[in-house]
Image 1 (tube, rainbow, N blue to C red):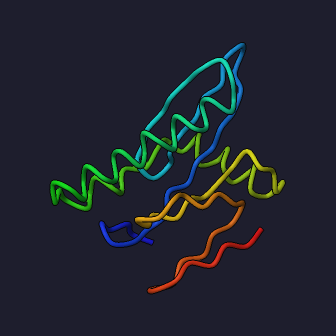
Image 2 (cartoon, rainbow, N blue to C red):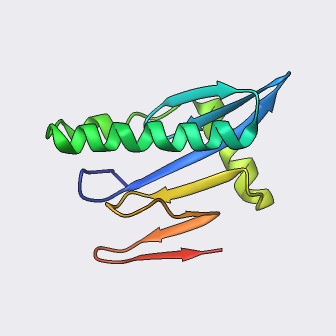
Length: 115
């Protein structure tokens, strides 16, 4: 699925490495780090929404919403999805509050989240 200013999906993975946590928005190639997983998760989601809102507000090119992270992060996300852990999330891009779940399916006019 190609993201646009009107619709799309943001996928995230949060993982630990050594004594730090990292959060990656796979669709925007945004990476943050910190000492607590919850803080990293909140920070990467907020920064990703700020990025989306900047693209929308300034009517920037949709390609800014389709910058994929490195393959190593996508592989990690796929492994988390296969294990059905809560460490991997998809967040629907809408003007409403983010919806976190392990699986989100988008429709043209509605969003259906499946836990």
